[in-house]
Length: 546
Image (cartoon, rainbow, N blue to C red; front, side, top):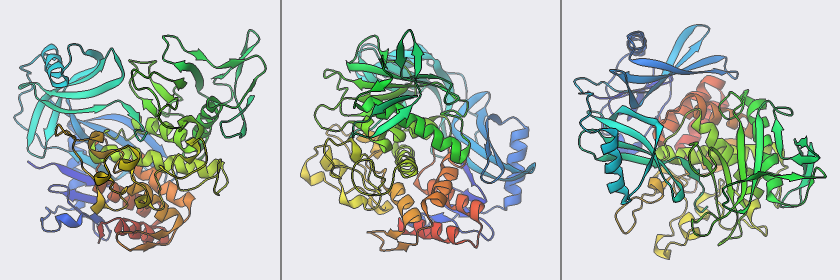
């Protein structure tokens, strides 16, 4: 049986290649036009899914209240004989007590034997063989049996396991091992990183800022115990090493000299303010979760430099938090750039909401929406212009030791940069960063393995470019199609609604296009200029919109 994909007012059936909605436009991948869709009425689908929820095929996992449209979004996890179905997740949209629509994916499963032939210990041995290591540490709390779909008709019983290596702080992965054969079905990292990679203080680029601190025993600490904002925020100084103990940054004067740790502590507060002020989000998980950030992490032997990342898992290194590594082979100090710090913060927002899997197109969307909202936060807190501490459509330029846009992702013109060039690949592979779905990259290393988790960074520039077109206006270099900008505030609301309320862990590029269309339609209406320009934007990046 084929999986059923249902989008808000957009019903994608068969293999998820088409969407059907009476009177509404939707996006279609032009490469799939020859494949015929199945068609069912929206009313039948609504009734069918309501009955499946009633029968217990779905478990309610989260409720999100959307202040923008006064809609309650209920996330349900599909289960089969008590086991989670990986990727089986629907979002029910309810307004005034009535179900309006659904988003997500649902798999029709029958006859699957849920008795594993391999134990979790045997699955761990299979992973050791796969990774070619003698030891792996399993996070027992993250391990469970799940149903893992292979396409639309093949379903496997699998051990879902979180594993790490004791000697590699950056290795922490979620894995799925076939519980019958020991085949590794999927693995992806839990550390989300960039591979191209009230006190007062002075930031790295000489910008003065204020931030909350705590006085204790005559020392002021970069530590706020829910006084300035309703969450605990701690910023640690790793002191240019990877020690076993880290220290909350402190001073006797409550004044910090020029350093990126000042930027990190202040910008995390800015990110919190942005999401709360505009969308009513209370911290990373909407429950004011403690936020730990670690500055000046550095270890040459373990390649801990020239980078920044969000670690979602609590085991390994210093635990869950934001890590900002010292420059070494480059001159980029990631903590100095507001869009870079808020990019990492937005990865955490993804973890606790849509939870986009960090692999392939869903992983590229994970990176894309972090770029989008890093930019949105930059525009909220900095004046538009060129130079340090100015808002623009370039990612991470303030990280550079001297001001330049070189080796920075561009949202206005992605093709002007090449992350493959920046990362030191041979010149024959210097493909431009894509701005159109026809430019999507998929590259393999010398061992035949996909690089960059199947392009999570290489392909993360298409949707930020779409955000630029919708907000600012412009012309796509490949399609030649133009968009009239609707302003950054409205564009940000549309992208937020699609990202948080309409995407699931396995949403792909086409799914993102339809989610954005649904959000624009629901927020501004079918006859609005905002919806018209959203359609033009989706066309500009390569999809056909009916």
